[in-house]
Image (cartoon, rainbow, N blue to C red):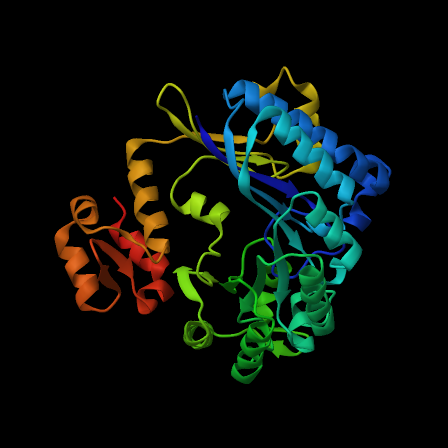
Length: 394
């Protein structure tokens, strides 16, 4: 039986954060799309349900065993509980959701009220990812976030009251205005909430974001952008603090208490199959003919809705991208996805693919290390992962 993860993209948010490169549409901009924001929010589940039906038939996915489901965004927590109920029902009709499936919903702190979180728990969602990002008011303001530190504490408390014990908190390393002391306080604050999982992302200025548009000015709201060497220093500080408090770094940006690693994310890094639903969502599927494909939906809400409405015209969807992977593509993905994890890749296999000489060089320079029969990146190597991957991929 085919094993599958499902990602559902909710492209709506109250406002666009300054660092965000994910496709999303602020609620204030929905009127030109549909003429009525409320109507579009009501209709959106119908498009996702239809996409599930189309994908199940087109890629022979019906009856697949679903081990994880992830509601991401955007801001999933702005959606009513009925949205999640309808989508989970549609997934159940087409696939077999494992009894112990990990089902995650992203939550913004300001929308993490007890009533909403209790409803999500009742529907079978068993993991929350709360976008804290920082506890400092100045850093949150430069990031364009609309919550404050009290919202983070309240959302975490409400999640626990609602019965969630698998809670993840997100932290961004290197926001403008985030000094070493501020970041240290951020790390201590997130630890005080005792989440099961922590995701910590080093700030990257991505094209198309508000940060990118003003990055040449080197400041926002009077705060300078954080130099890369400072971001690296903050990351090392965080790794040390988390290790001292029982969190293992199992991937470059992810830390967990024992048994709370994200199964959904691990499936990505292990090249497991996943189906992405919604505009900009990506899928990785292994077809019956031995081909492997990566498919990315158009990052345009109107085009996405038109594509799904066509149904019969799915082979020529406007703006969708489909890539058939070559053997070289597969090998390169195996290398860099495996090395992102703390488990690494089989040493003999890596030497065959990349060459013994360069691997020995990286080990000697302290960027790689042996982990039983595998080779993994050291903390030093994790900070330079992009450069290392570029050197060893074929």
